[in-house]
Image (cartoon, rainbow, N blue to C red; front, side, top):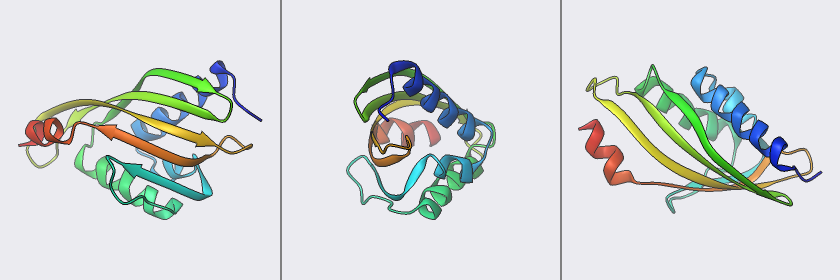
Amino acid sequence: MAPDLETARNIARQHCEAWTARRPEAVADRYSEVTSFGMNGGDPMTTRPEIAEMAAGFMADFPDLVLTCDTVLAADHHMIYAWTFEGHHKATGNPVRFSGWEEWDLDDDLKVVKSLGWYDVADYERQIA
């Protein structure tokens, strides 16, 4: 089943809620068993445990993180999800706020089979330092 725009918004909302609730397994559960998740052209993660580990790392570094959905576009089994991440870095105490987006290909169960994402790494690192 391909999502309509309202369904796509709900998928993005649930994804943000999992991040904000600090539930790495719930973040990983948004992805299919066979998946690919790459950020900024890096090597993709291909398993749910890898995705959960990545999410848990951000959650540990930002104990007060909030992820919000900025916008969603949907067409057939493809959606674009733009987001904003906010929180205080645990080690430096610095407030951090950065935005990015992900392109998701979904399977018939509305799980992410492929995700390509981008955010400004230099800006992110500058805010942490």
